[in-house]
Image (cartoon, rainbow, N blue to C red; front, side, top):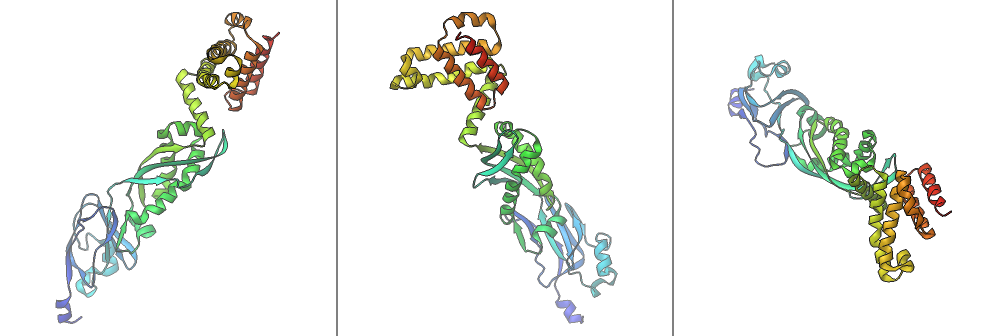
Length: 343
């Protein structure tokens, strides 16, 4: 290189990135035809990291701080570029800055219902949505796997891939958690924790750290939602089956009353609105006594029990059994006990 060429050549003596906008994950320092001067200053701010790429290979990674670029601070580049020859071997490595700030309020959701497998219900379909936040944790890995040589790589460039990653792992998250889906759906914090456990290693594979994952809503098929509502109702009255049956009967009374008002339905055909309410009370008493095994309490009630009342009670027990709340053995035992009252 001639003296005039050397004089005309432009050298970079300060390398830094001021992050003039949000949402940028990786930014390549504009080198053009310039070369980095020996002893130049490198400034890496908090929430940033810098990567030097030499001949297509990541040579060094710098965390926050101010560095003077010499043979002592860049030993790998010293070996590759023979810094001891100074400008006879120009320093033309590419420099990439990475933002390690937390990228918050990223949305995820299921555009269409997805099918998952559950131990209790087999295959079910659901829709869900929430948000999450992440940060670049390993810029070397993120550069080689994702951003590459692009001048700028933003959060929006990565959005589609991360959404797909979340959707792909929802089913695995539920399966690996070992928690019944109804418990996950009724406790969104547990659901989010299961997703985080499943997704964190997947994010790490591309140099990212999953910081926060939230589940804001889970939409279930109507029948499954009814069962979930019953489970929540049972939680309100505790695990006492008699109390739960009273709760179920109380939920049914408005339907009896509605049928009475319209002149149809069980209560309407038999006894009108007042009788419908009375029937609900009889059912509650009988079910409470029968399910709790209280013989003393059952005796007075049995004297006034009618055949249609017993049949209505059996129908209610059948519905509960079909939803998995009663086992077949429990149902058979209660049926036999109720039928004895007809004798």
